[in-house]
Image (cartoon, rainbow, N blue to C red):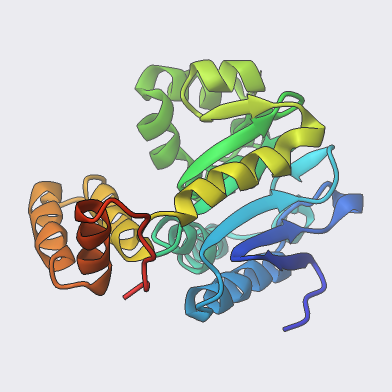
Length: 260
């Protein structure tokens, strides 16, 4: 599939999905959100894709925010539809993606950009990264999950301060806040993230899909995450990956997971 606003590159099972609107600092518009959805949908069904790295073109921006020109004249109802559609198509879709998704945050990750990074399963940042949710400075609030995911990651107090001040934090603050897992030099960002992806790929992707569902269940209203864990744990015993993993362990060899 050909895209206008994103690039994709599969390198031995590691798929890079790159937001490619450098003149707009990779800002998200409707077309880009749709293309990202389509790229993730393709990756979900592609057996050659094991891990996804999500990043932006260049060192200036991961995603500098949403494209404000698209919704500056929206009504309240149109605003609700915008948020609901975006969350369903992209942000929740990424958060619940059955394969590991790592955000490699280069430069600005603001507004919808930070919300997209937070939807990924975890984040690596270059030391020039700047992150924030500036929506209140526009008379808005975050609409793509920011009010929910930021407190989960950094705690209620810090999330409230970030949202209320509309300010940015740098990569080292983000590391201190547990918003990112690692910080590295900009030129090392993709290589560093790929090293983590390669470690992930040594393990059972079937088990990881189950773990993603179990971890996410803890954040769903009305869902008992412990019960989901028990169910997914039990189901793991019926997989070929479990048979291979235990056989490899008992025979003191490296596992070669079939992914089933």
